[in-house]
Image (cartoon, rainbow over all chains, first blue to last red):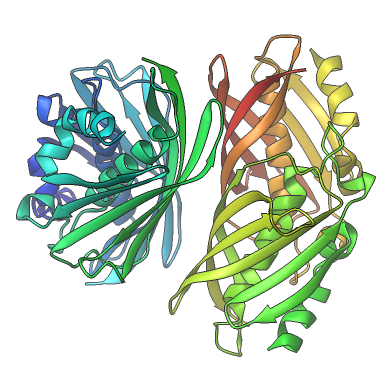
Length: 133
Length: 133
Length: 133
Length: 133
C-alpha cells in the first residue's frame, strides 16, 4: 500500500516543487510534511493558503486511495478548507483521514498543523472519487 | 489600486514559484494566469488541484482587497472549491469576483478556466476578512 | 419533466411543513418559493438559515434531476452555503441551476433571493449524485 | 449559560416547527435532538437534508455562542455539510463543537448522528460571527 501511494506521490510534480514529503501511510490515514521556504509564502511571509490546501488535498486524496481497490485512482471532487491561524511555522504537517469510504465517493478530513503538530492551522473536508486506472 | 494589488502579489513567493501572473485588476474583479509546467502536476500530468486552488484563492483575495480601505490587508477565512474538469490545458486562468463586500467580511467567487477562457475547470466560493495593516 | 419533479417534490414532507412551493421547472433550472411565517424563524424573527438551506438544497437537487435519466433519483452529497444578508423578507425565492452535469455527479449553484428577487440573501454550491430508482 | 442559550433557542420558531429540542449545553458544545415525523421527510421518507442542516446549524451557532461575551449574539456566516448516510432513523442527534473561538469569528464542527448516537449521518463545518445584541 505504501509503495502504491509513494509511486503516485512521486508523479505529482507539484509536491516536488513545494518540497513536500510523504511520511506516513496507513489504511485510511496519510501524513505529508512541507518545510518552509520563501518560495511558498503569501504577502506576510507565512505559508500561502495554497500550500496548506495543496498538501491537505494530497493527504486526503491518498488517505482515500488506501481504501480503494487496486486498479483505481483517486480524483478530488471538491474540498472546503478553513484557515484557522496564520501559517507561521517552519514546517507544515498535513494529515488526511477517511471519514467515510464508499464505492464511488470517499469523504476525508484534513488537518494541517504547525511543526509541533499541536497547533491546528487549517481544517479541510474533502470529497474524493475513485476512477478506473 | 492596481499598484497596491501588484505590490502585494509580488510579495507572494508562491505566485513566483508557480509562475503565476497578475494580469487584470478592476474594482471587485481580479485575473491571474498560470502557464503549465511539469512542476505543477498531479499524478496524471495535469495541473494539481493545489495550483488551481492557489491562484483562485489569490484572485479572490485580491478582488476582495480592491473593495477594502487603503490601510487594510486581506486574509482568507475559508474557501470551498469544486473541481469540475481535469485541468488538462497549457494555461489556467483564474478570475476572482466579489459577490458581497462587507465591513469585515467579503464573499467572493472564483472561476478557473482553461486557456480558451471558455471551459470552466473549477469553481470557488471564498470568505475573506479585512485586517488592519 | 415538470410532472416528474412535482411528484417527487410532493413526497417531501418537509416542503409541505415549510409551506414551500415548486413554481418553475426547466432543464437545469428549478425555482422554489417559501412565504414567511413565525414557524420558520431564527431568534431575531427572520427566516432561519435552515429554511434558506432546505429550499436551496431542494432547488439544486431538482435542477440536477432534470438532467438525469428517467429511471434515476437524486441525493445530496454535500453543499456549502454562504448567508450573505439577514433573511428579512416576506418570501424567499430559491433558484437552483446546474453548473455541470456528469454521469454520476452533478454540480449545482443555488441562489436565494428576497421577495423582490433582487436582493441575494444566500448562495449555495451543491454536489448531487444520481442513484438508480 | 444554559438559560441564555435556551432563551434564544425558544425564540427560534423553526426549532419548534421541526420538533427539535435543546438537550445539552456546555462551554463549546451543544446538543439538539429531533424526532422523526412525516412532516420532516425528503422523497424517500427519510429525514430531509434540510432538517439535518437546520439542527446542525443551530447546534454549531449555540456552541459558538457559549464562547462569546454576554452582550453579543451569533449569526451564521456560512456552512458546509456532507451528507454521509441516508438519515433513516427515528431521531437525529446533532452535536455542535467549537473548533476555534476568535474575537469576531468562531469556527465550529457539527456532527449529526442517528438515534444510537453511533452512526454518523452528516458532518458540518460552520463559520459563525458574533454581533452586538
